[in-house]
Every structure is written in structure tokens, then in C-alpha cells.
Length: 124
Image (cartoon, rainbow, N blue to C red):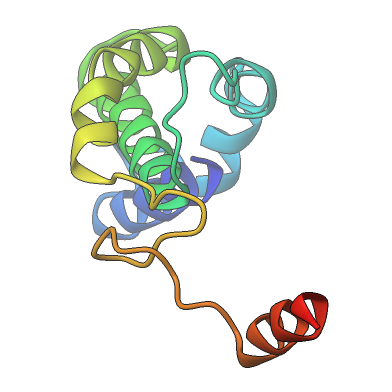
């Protein structure tokens, strides 16, 4: 989230410095740090998988920058997190984590050779 806001703000500042503030300005103004560290990382409303969390963070950061730049509202973190929280079920559906003990296709993992040997020794 922080990286996305900083990168988009720095890019926009390079394009038109009269209109857009720099990356450091966006990172230190408002409640961005509070939102990135405490609000967006809520385990109940954040996606389950790592790739889902990455998509969630990039989406939050992009929305924060867009709302701050063109929405005429300096505190955009709350709106960005709320909008991305509404998309969490869709993100979880797209980025399903694999079940424990299963491969990427959903089939059970093959047991190692030593477990078979241990079972054979136990039978004797």
C-alpha cells in the first residue's frame, strides 16, 4: 500500500509537479501510515492468500492516490479500505490458497519413501 502510493505520487509529481505533491508528501500526510499498518491489515476483512493480500494492498494504494489527487478529499484511506474490503470475496475467489497437504491441482501430496519404510518396520 505504501509502496503503491509512493510510486504513483512520485510518477505524477514527475509528470506535473505544479499539481501533484511528491511521494514523501503523500506518505506522511493524513492517516496513510495508520491505515496501512493497522486498518488494512485487519485479519477479519483482509484476503486469505498472499497473492490476494498483495492485490488488496496495491488496490488500496492506488485508490488512496486517486481519491487524494482527483477526489478533493485528503483523507482517502478509509474510503479506499472500505472499497477494497467490498472486493475481498472476489479476490479470495480468484486467489484461492491451496489446501494443506494438497498440490496446486488439489490432489493429495505423495508420501515420502521414508514414511513407507517406517510403516513396513512397524508391521514387523
